[in-house]
Length: 126
Image (cartoon, rainbow, N blue to C red):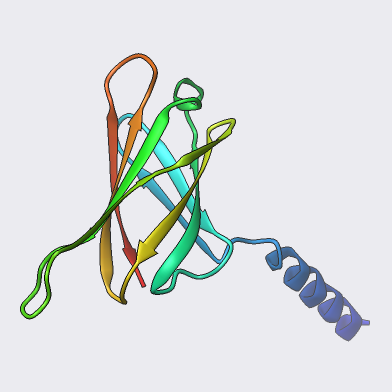
């Protein structure tokens, strides 16, 4: 009976993780919290990311993303600017190109219809 219960628990645990995002990170500033997710693990190249902004006042804002990797010996500075697509309800989608493995800096700029732009900073390791 204990073995059957363990098998059932493992099966339920496995089924629950099938719907989980392969990548998830919360980025915060004093004024906003953004949850970044991707259905697949982040890899070099194009990555489709979903951004969820928790604050209802920012649900219909313009969202732009800057990803960059600073210059290093033998390698130039890399940078990309992306405008996120508004999916409604505080949910946004963006195609982010991370051209190589390493630590990428990300700045999310949320510009509401009224008020000042909000900058949320984080980093991505791939």
